[in-house]
Length: 173
Image 1 (cartoon, rainbow, N blue to C red):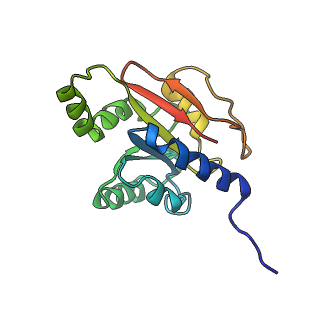
Image 2: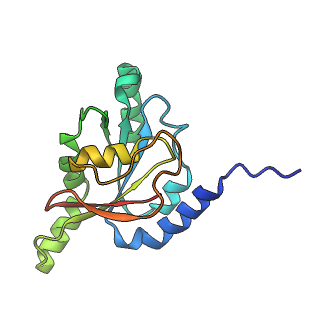
């Protein structure tokens, strides 16, 4: 008997991500701070190739801070910026816009040289189900723009969410 471990909704999301990757500047990957490697989809590394990256370690209040710091060093050694957050209570959310700007500074400078001044950075939010993507988006946008639930598959379609004049997010299922 052949057992398929890769759920159909994740295959569908992967296909959607491949279509939309050309529209975005940075991939923001949301991970559970308690189990960062286990809450990661390994396909994201290949799909987000040649894009700026930012890893958000969510649910940091439930994780050991010393171990979380080691994970931050691990991702830094891989050339990926990280921010430790708790999307539910808003801890660490203020640092995200600055990190996105820092990660995309080369792109912003290229645009400025071409005469493109106020184009917002387009980011794609990715992560496995139940890692807190919708909670993060609602907290980051400071308004309820996505439906939240404690089961996988609550987000059904993709949508663009304008955070501020500098950042737009693409929420994917």
